[in-house]
Image 1 (cartoon, chains in turn red, orange):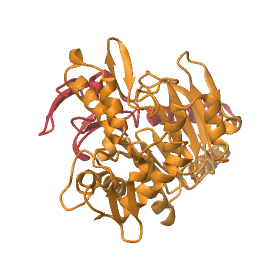
Image 2: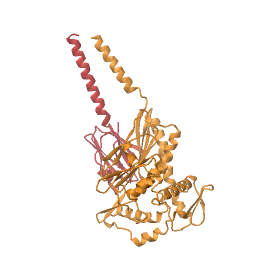
Image 3: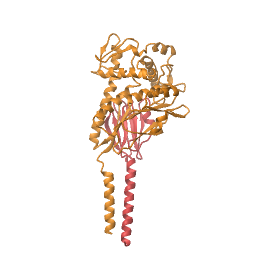
Image 4: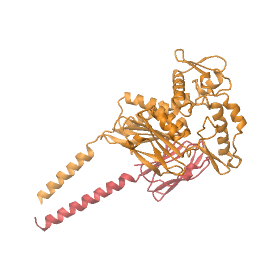
Length: 109
Length: 342
């Protein structure tokens, strides 16, 4: 084992650790906020782009916001406002539900 | 140098084999609509498309039952409990065999739960339902039903007045003021039916969660257990405890925090004690673990109404059912065998 071998070994180990870390982190954090209305896909918003989307259907109105990698419902016309109170979501499989308007926002990979 | 590269390559391959050899991936789909709740279906499949097909199949079963057992609205082309509540008062009417089957199940449940879960309590429940709905529209005008009106309605809750004929699939409601309400059992019953159908298809490692009514289907491929969280009452996403649940089991929680309305700062939940005609308020929640989801649903409601000692005695009739109570002061109680799930 000469010096080059050691450097190579160290570099490979470092690379492995980085790859491992990247996979670990990506496992949890979702990439998209998928919006469903009446169980049909309405829109998929990438979580890495700040956006606002007003979802207006015959059932009602919900304003979905993506900000700093998180998704939330900013305002809605439903009577219970549970969707607004649910707050910000960013992890895979986390969801926001508005039963009266039959709207679901799910964080997907 | 070559040795190191070779060793590294072997390591990477091993990692890949252990990590990539599973051709099944976990997916999840969320539905709203059936039983007025959020239904999450998750499971393992080769790809998203085949997962979605199976999940849609499960949801379709639940949605169909939801329509059949709906007491508030009618749907084109089907005779459901809503139309039955109106039409079956004069003479027996023929109905769907799944409705007669459910009503027979509900009658069994009435006697099994010491009459705490009564599918004939509709006239009383509808009064509370109306008050709750009014409160959602105008919280400042929220009010309680008058006791006299509740007592008058309670006269018409004799489950024996619901006459089911399983052979001819007919139902006759002998008391014109009696209304069927299967809210305490219908969802669990439907989930059980969907799960059983999927077990027959050989599905394994799947879970249906219908608004907190959890049913596992088959074992997980790795033989592991599912983590099923019991919600901390009145918290949004926190869990009180997390259970370890194997395949073919149901976990159902009845909670005072799920559906309620507020009058003068006091919460009135949706689980009505047939004895007092008022919401049961002995616990924040009661969770039941047992194999049959319909039974779990009914037992969690019954236990929510009963004293702990009565409840524990009741459970002696169901050797594979275990329960977990959260009391208003936050303390907990559980059956002897509940520890196996913790």
